[in-house]
Length: 627
Image 1 (cartoon, rainbow, N blue to C red):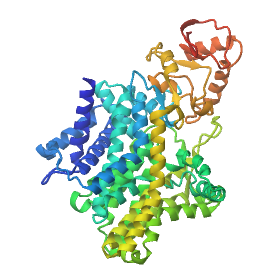
Image 2 (cartoon, helix red, strand yellow):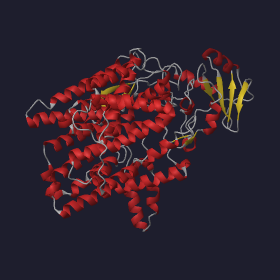
Image 3 (spheres, rainbow, N blue to C red):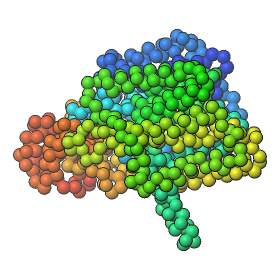
Image 4 (cartoon, rainbow, N blue to C red):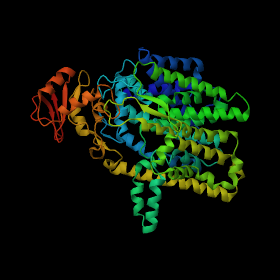
């Protein structure tokens, strides 16, 4: 029944509410458009869910109003299913297989995290933090929700996708991790594929989908991790040694090949593709979908939201100048209004001190690049992204028009932003071990996809005028750009199927889950002696995010890496009491003062002995005690 309820919420809050953006009048929509509409509707309902909490209204209030508005405005058309006419072609089948190959790792890993009463394993260190916020929103009565990692902590954050999962779980009773990993993330993956097909058909109908879709799904180089700085030396060693062995380690460096994205990066990828597709389809669909996706992106993936807004405004400004008309400025003004409303509602109105502030810092990104290997590697990465365009030199000059140049301006805008502004963390002195200022570079992460869109749009404009040889050269260039990443994706997918413990940032949750299952999730406050996250041989300290993520328990202070508050240094000192070899009266006093209820002990890590507490659970790895 909970699964049925979750699907009904997804249909009503996703597909039906999405009619507000993509009305169903006239002909039925294609499956690709319907999938983008469904996810956009779910995103709008998520914003409504968060706004309900902001207004201290029942959590379902605004999503219900949105559903009623869609049903009232579009009536039967809001419920009309999409067209199920599917043309099976060799090009389409090949494009579908390549798309599934590109996205197989996140799909396999998310299904591995779904079964059971709690997620049996985690891949990617950001996943437990994401799931913690879903648990927090399920129990929240106001916005922003209270932190489960740090009691009494609150912070503004991009809660959009967390809100979507919490809305479905809260309304259906389906377990949060199952909603997230068996429903929301697979839906995002399907949406990325659908948005790529919708975009490819809108801007490049003459090009084979088997070329365009993989190019849209492979954002390599990512411009976050070094690419050619890693690839070039490995290739030189391989050629010098006449052996493929140097390439073995390169193909196991999963991060530079973008095969291990976290959930919010998937959301960012969807937003970039769906926004571009909505802009391209605006003459037939209208601007509502594009304006919403662009304006609200900041609540789903903040750096992507900044990049998209900057790019869209600059591109529309270019169109105003080139077309000598103010008409292109109208959707930009509407998107800015949505952006301002979303930012104001979820960052300004909550009476929570801001963690970050924006300052002017010329050449911030270039200074980073220069100090991290040199700008030549960055130039090589950019050249690799536009390689198919370079390969088609004999004809690409004919492919430039105002729209293509606008897309180039769109892609350049994030680079301008990160070289003019930067973020400054205002929590200095709170005892945090690492600041979030470097995350400002994530504004560059949409650039690879945007450049690939630009390349496709130019090739599409001149494709019919290119000779067979030039087309072949451009096609080979696309294969060079995409096939290595697809090979690594296939290899990582096999690792996830055959030996998941070798997966990226793998964490086994089963032993801890058995221990936490003995502790109620309400009216309790957990402390522990071990704040290490177990992935990669416990290499990450002060972020034991499994404790709040598995069932939604409230922890005293287990995450000093992502969250820091004025009281964090004091909490850290109290935490050290539980890492001493013997019991002290200070522990008893701290438990009384801060109302600790349960102590979780990892037995192979330093802890007080003996413990004068009632033991509730004991295994080979963990023990649970009650204060």
